[in-house]
Figure 1 (tube, one colour):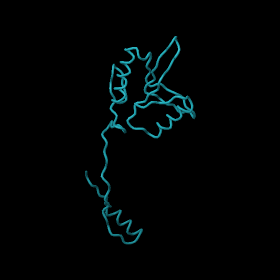
Figure 2 (cartoon, one colour):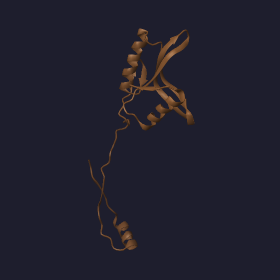
Figure 3 (cartoon, helix red, strand yellow):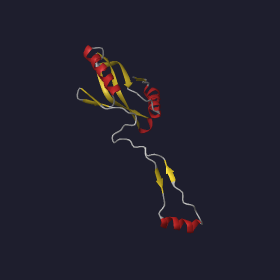
Figure 4 (cartoon, helix red, strand yellow):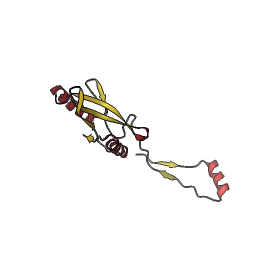
Length: 141
């Protein structure tokens, strides 16, 4: 880490002396600069490709593989990714996965899941709105 100091040019120092009276020159120590590499992600998630689909994190990719196996085994009948739900106030919630079973052409049961590494305040509010507005509990994986 490098330390930087801020110094005044002689002309600027003379201007400040004339304006405010006599001043002693002092070096000001600034905090070190924090540099994040280009493309660094806020929550350190790593986008991952699975079956030609881009998923937002390794955790989400792992769950997608698990649900894919359940789909192939016939445990679930459908699997949706990034399903959007409308919430009050023009807010939109995007669920990572919606899956469930279909019986005689209609949905018998379904589940909404979100792959979470960090539970943010915005997520908590949206999950509560999903429960109160739609009666859907968002499961976290």
